[in-house]
View 1 (cartoon, rainbow, N blue to C red):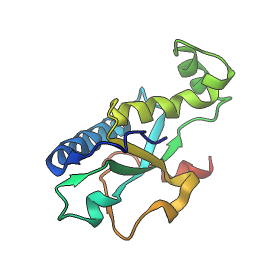
View 2: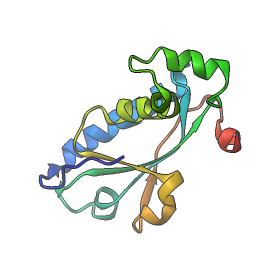
View 3: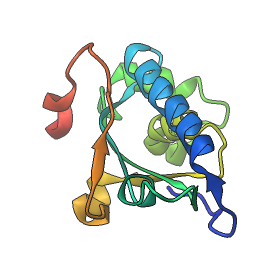
Amino acid sequence: MTSGRKDRKIKRATADKLLEGVQQRILEVNSDDRFIVKITRAVVFGSYVNNPELDMISDLDIGLETVCLYKPRDPEYQAKAMECKSYDFITQMYWPKEEVLRYVRNRSGYISLHNIEVDGEAIFSKEIKELEVGQGKDYRHLKNH
């Protein structure tokens, strides 16, 4: 779920612009009914928040927590999955989340996405910055769906 670009660094101003884009795309995901996976929590951590004095950082670390609105066997999920170009069993199980992650990352090699659900908060360094995930529906109740 991460990027692989650790060999090059970016300026903080570039990271600021990337973060603005990430924030905007998170809000778009959560307000667009075409996405059946929603982002329930998003945080920035790592050198971006822990070392504000640094002008150059390696990447922008974003932790995401997501929830799928439907179970894989629900007709709504099946209908959305069949719209995917490469529909198969694996696609059916993973494409909705992958679609959201790709959209949020926007092909940037400087954005590293981390799965809070799998890695837990152990991935966080000493400081984190919570990101706005939207004013619309609260999807947290679906975590045990």
